[in-house]
Length: 221
Ligand SMILES: Nc1ncnc2c1ncn2[C@@H]1O[C@H](COP(=O)(O)OP(=O)(O)OP(=O)(O)O)[C@@H](O)[C@H]1O
Ligand SMILES: O=C(O)c1ccc[n+]([C@@H]2O[C@H](COP(=O)([O-])O)[C@@H](O)[C@H]2O)c1
Image (cartoon, rainbow, N blue to C red; front, side):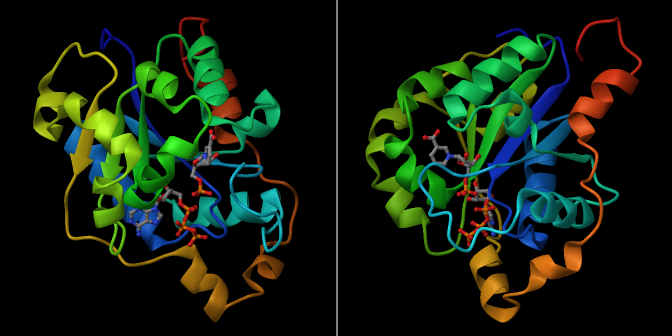
């Protein structure tokens, strides 16, 4: 993989709602991996999560924009316009649509623990490097997971990743830092009606918008 375009971390999630933990892990990954920016892809619906209790997409996007304010983070619901639900399909579509960008998949250790249940997870790992962020309570399960049994042979340090001008996938980068205990589950428990405060017109999609406004070569950036 040749590093010649903006290096973009993809943090996919339900963001039901977004919180300071998302922001903190994104900024940490940005620094540790030498990313140019992080996209928060607010999922129309995680294929493995129940629909019940999921706030409307527009409310989740609005909350994510607030939580990411003034950071090199773009919030997008691009899976809605791509018509994709599974990450393998999303990543392949993004690579076609943004051919100059280089993508890295970011996820918390809770998702690594379940990664073997994702559609075509080995093929997904061959599409782009994966960086996993330590998360309180999940690291043991992640380390013992079937996906880790396969991925561990592709381990790479964050420093090695950041210093390379070229690298290949699969690659697994474990980002270790002072883990952040915040979760959307805890926020929903404390404030079940948070989404009601997110009224207003549907927010603009920042990634699609950037395609129109980014000074570029006429290509999708
Ligand atoms: N505190 C955190 N530390 C590390 N990773 C996190 C943290 N919070 C969220 N993530 C990661 O961010 C991505 C999106 O998370 P998500 O929107 O599901 O939030 P969540 O807090 O895990 O939600 P819920 O509690 O509803 O499961 C996932 O890859 C998740 O692992
Ligand atoms: O592709 C899959 O099979 C798949 C299964 C479960 C989750 N995902 C993705 O994982 C990301 C994290 O989801 P969540 O709900 O844990 O925040 C989000 O982008 C989901 O679309 C993807």
